[in-house]
Image 1: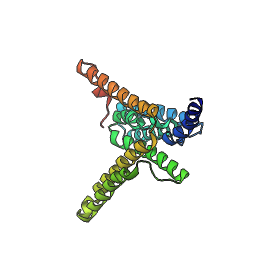
Image 2 (image 1 turned 60 degrees about the vertical axis):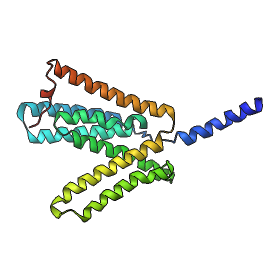
Image 3 (image 1 turned 90 degrees about the horizontal axis):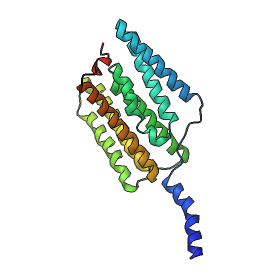
Image 4 (image 1 turned 90 degrees about the vertical axis):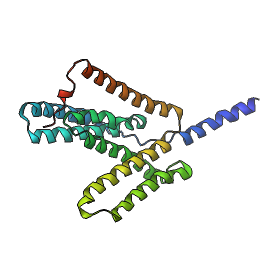
Length: 216
């Protein structure tokens, strides 16, 4: 009985290594100050836009929020980084550029995961199911055969979104085999839903939330 217990204890580190891959965690100490500085500058630019309706300041706020989102995506632990684009999108919503900020931040998350694969010289985990999201990208790519040159930009955007979506699915399957990591992702998603629900409720009872968005 004691031998069996010792064998089980010896197997645990191996199983944890298989189920919990080594995430690429940035050690750059400047990422969090960069995220905070970009967020503050973006908020200041947003206030200026609300007063002056300056297009330049609106673009400044948009890119500052995007930089803050990318910095968070690289600095946060991977389970929280997967939901960071949703929270970065709140800042993008202030200047009516939520989709761009979300996509830029998500690109950073998927790129971080992809760099981890490259560094480890391996394919994504998931067995034959990894070919499903890859197949969706290939299927979407075939659309280039039936579109006109006028729709090429829209098609490129659609293809880029499909690549990010497939990359996110692969990253989730590959990276979160451990129960604790999945719980962290779910907690991040639930917290976002609660935050959005609070915002909708405040708007419903008369608190002016929607006017915070500057669509100029």
